[in-house]
Picture 1 (cartoon, helix red, strand yellow):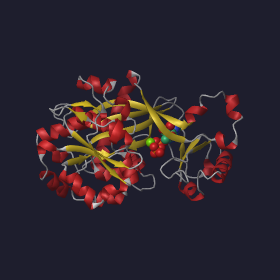
Picture 2 (tube, protein in one colour):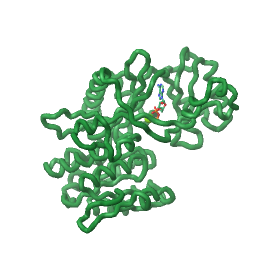
Picture 3 (cartoon, protein in one colour):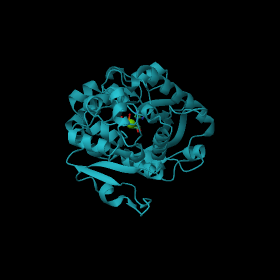
Picture 4 (tube, rainbow, N blue to C red):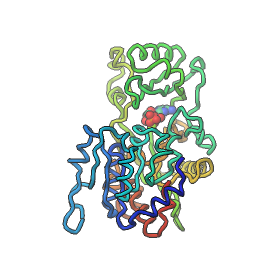
Length: 385
Ligand SMILES: Nc1ncnc2c1ncn2[C@@H]1O[C@H](COP(=O)(O)OP(=O)(O)O)[C@@H](O)[C@H]1O
Ligand SMILES: [Mg+2]
């Protein structure tokens, strides 16, 4: 892990009046850029050729003589052959020369090697570098481990497929599209065997991944992804903020649920098993009497990260939950960084974030406002690793 003092030393060399916000141009980059522009920053998006046009063309920023953006929010783009090249000395040098504070997103931790992020990426990262690895289900001290330490409910694991005695979710990567899911559900051990054989035949999953798959109880109920924010700079105010709630459109699952049961039953083998690829987002609110249950979970999570992964969570994080008939929130995934669904708050903010901040407050804007506060109060070193 790069020494935090070393990163702070790099930050000390930055021109404080010209700090820019950078990120990998994917995932939540538009939200981060939008918020950054609103808070008076220039933005730097690191793109991959062939998927750069939303950033290099369609959401490109135009500014007037006084520097005020009148269109778009992506000021500067760097188009690489592959996202992974952000690790090269040349690109790191460029980012530092532009005084970039880099906001990690899931595309950063998916397309770049985690070891390289931890040991080689000598650019100030907003947030906790060491927590990014907790997202990997294959890791020992992963987010399930953290949730257990924190005493937060998560879906019970079923160790042996023969023990399946109710609906389960089987989590493993897609055999070919490695960054996508090869998830499937099964209600009995027999169904697990039959379905997995069929998916292996279809090249959706591999036997090797199936062996290492996480099998967990399926929580039957709606999904709420809570977009939280933690500020280590908070004074009298609460450090934990609920900015928004999103839920996801998943293909092909959302198409399946729009078909009558009789039609679902006549789908062919290939169409029968839904895949769970996140393809869009929507905003939600929570019944007010249930809000009371979700803040203690966030408190526990923040505390556990501080204890086990110091300095702990800094800035945005998303708790992905399902709520079953018992009305209890079960955390099935944690994003220890900006979540993937925050574009629903872009520009318009979110009912919770806006009400809290008495102005439009998206996650992207909250990140930028925090960095601005860090600069103004000379406490930016507390926000980076
Ligand atoms: N235990 C569970 N019970 C019910 N649905 C689940 C469960 N775990 C995951 N899901 C569903 O699968 C989707 C993806 O799960 P997630 O764990 O977030 O995968 P990933 O790590 O690939 O993001 C969720 O959006 C949710 O709809
Ligand atoms: Mg997830």
